[in-house]
Length: 101
Image (tube, rainbow, N blue to C red; front, side, top):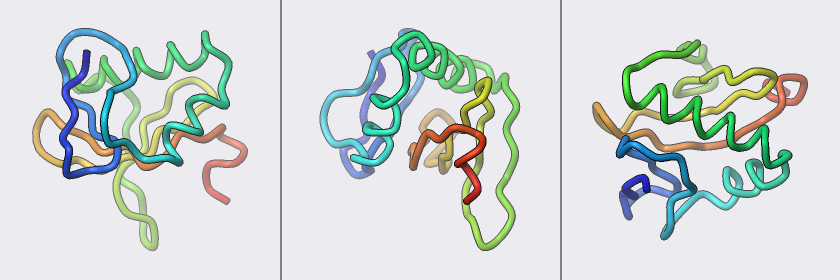
């Protein structure tokens, strides 16, 4: 299971498995992920885990006025901030057509 940093809403650190963290998480990010089909949600979690494990993935720094980064996972975008080398804080998970509105 992922370790959870209790000072942030929804933080993931790499620990080798894909599961939603227990404890304090962003209601928006959790709701976004639950609104997605189970198979797609698992693909998103694997994409996040792969990024945490070896920084593999399509990640771009967002341009102002947005802050943080986005990870592309198929038709979905995961918006996050880097907390440290192995921890990210997920702000949201959106379909690409809704992601930048």
